[in-house]
Length: 427
Image (cartoon, rainbow, N blue to C red; front, side, top):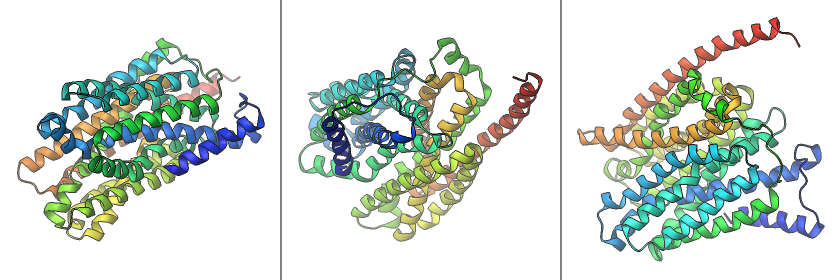
């Protein structure tokens, strides 16, 4: 985390010391440092979002103690955030579609600052739930705008890997941010965690203003075209990969602690190690799959889904040995890199509706976040052991693979048609 701040600060200091602001020529060969700085700042924003979203889960007992509520009542604060993401993503993405990306990003970061600050000062659970809903509003919109900007500045053949670097902030949050704020919350107060997210949002606002170029969008948006994306069957089948398949990741992740305590039967501190292993897997998987997606996003997605099915089954037996469990959790974490692959696929099949695509992807991931734990919880309620959520996850991954196969067949059917059209209408 401190590396993020140090590198970004050095860069901002450098451009001010030199006495010039970034030009709009971000795609020239001489602007490699500019591209790196932009990606770093965009990743800082996703780091804040990851910190704000995932830090609430370990904070629930402390919130319950503060407001005298039950854990299930305090859990409304988490649900409110997810609802905010689903509501805010399409509304904010579409209303800012033709706005310059820097201006849109500054608006979204301002919302992060205000909502996290208000959440830290909440005097009742009801207030916290409302403020957490507000915190969720800019989540999907920021991701969408940041990914589109990364795509715009990427050199030819590097789009997917550039987009994956934006997600890197979120994965780093799972490794470093969440364990740190959990420690802070346990020793001081959960309010410091949300206040810290607000402070980071203020810092990110300054960096975005200084580093991100204030240029026109590469592809102006048309609202009719944006809504036209909803008629594309291929878009919905690809989103189905996320809604069904990615639910398997959340199904396992939600019950890792229960698996370790009930099945593995090791000390509670091993839960933190398992979470770190998951976060490291997220980071590495995001990087590797992002690189692979530059060559073939659709084939890489299918291969990744097959691997996750194998590791979901392995999770059940590996849970009897903590070291084997660490290894499997690491590989399950790698599957989070599918997020970049899905985003790349959707931008390829619906280039006329990037703003709507950005919103739909975030809605799909939050739907998966609801489906996975819910289905896993049903299995446990019916008598399954916590580690047997691996079987449930494998079924969800298999469903995601089915949606991938449908998408693959549809994509192959569309490509010959597009080629025939290009031959019949030569330029």
